[in-house]
Figure 1 (cartoon, helix red, strand yellow):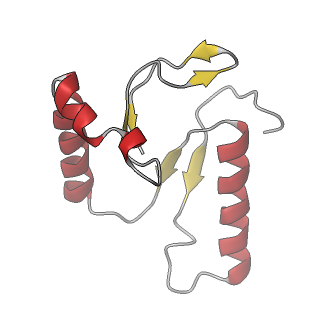
Figure 2 (figure 1 turned 45 degrees about the vertical axis):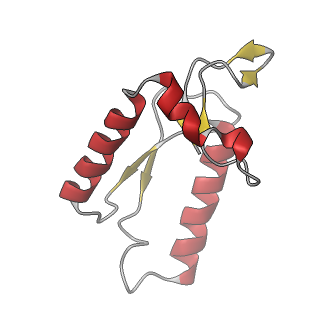
Figure 3 (figure 1 turned 30 degrees about the vertical axis):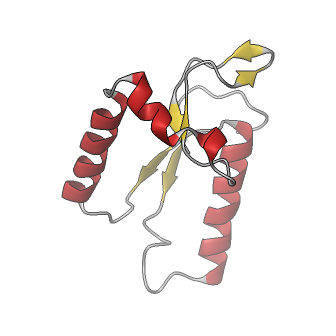
Length: 107
């Protein structure tokens, strides 16, 4: 995948790097793939991560509950109140290529 053009959402396979026998080369190859994907596309799916599916489902449920809260509640953790700029970012607060981003997020 060169540049930022892509036809499908990238899949990052963690199967080799989650093994206790993962080599330095495998770890470096995965890190480079992750870096490249983050810089060129900006998002991806992770597969074969070895995570407990119940934990992952719980995290998704918690995220849905958070984003369903009224705006005033979400803004209680607004990132502009954090010295590290971590927290909630309201939809349209950030710009890409001069246009407001159509997403809300927690960083």
